[in-house]
Length: 398
Image (cartoon, rainbow, N blue to C red; front, side, top):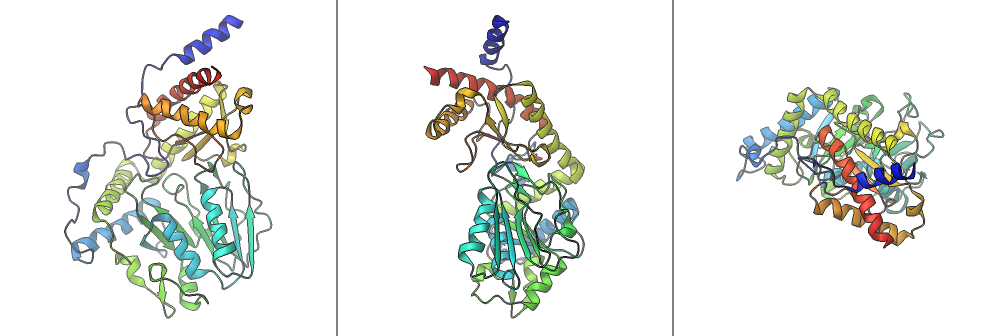
């Protein structure tokens, strides 16, 4: 029996025969859609004012095709805003919070940032900050429908997503502000439970960064037109003037100057998604990537999911941790350095790039499994992760 185990370890420590043909697994900016090339940008409205007819037409096209691909309700407004998803969330919080109590739910780095904003930056009097550790979800059971709610749909740095929206009341009086940046295009959004939805182009679409999307329900628009926060709002965050919505934001008139190369790139991604078969096809690709990792973990002994509850495991930011007893004996610094070496070995062999976990998360591997990552590439990188882990482990022991 012992020789069979030794043979199995030896085979794992042999370099896999085949590499992913597109070994990019970064969680942002994410992998480009299959078949992408610089030629996709040739029709960009370069050297034109972003207020010109040609540029505004393209910006409006981004809005229209985003609605089509994501199946966003017709009465929801869609705007292009500065500073990526972060800017979109900040705009919503600074412009809309303060009318009533607020609950902020967080279970990883970016959600914790919104927790800090509500708890320390904005002068909110009635606030409830609910946090959970990496790998877990907070308790939503005491949510008050009178309060505003801020939460992430999918925790990018923890690989943990919400199970459902049953905890959000259909009779709510407050607004729900949802950071959905690593969920849209790979997960179904329950639009009618969401009043403010934000995301960026660089995540599941695999497009260039810097721009965010802000989606508002009629209830969110009503808040902007009936409530003015008691604090000053910087121009770059401003969504209303004198309780009147700045409607141009939602028809291609951006607050600041957008990159028209980025606009062309996101149009390419949206067209790719539509031509591929739409939202259900994109979700299927991502969910299949999660299944591939799940099946691999079931058959091997080196890793486990950071999210313990299978119902909460993300299909985009798939976070896994070493689980063998030897790794657990390392101190925190050595665990970090060890996983850096594992990822460095993967990169030096051109088998997988940017697979390291987020800096504040437990040391491990984060495989981006969003819709632009082909299933075959996830399938092929997994034996390389095993090989790199065992090879680095042997080196560390010496």
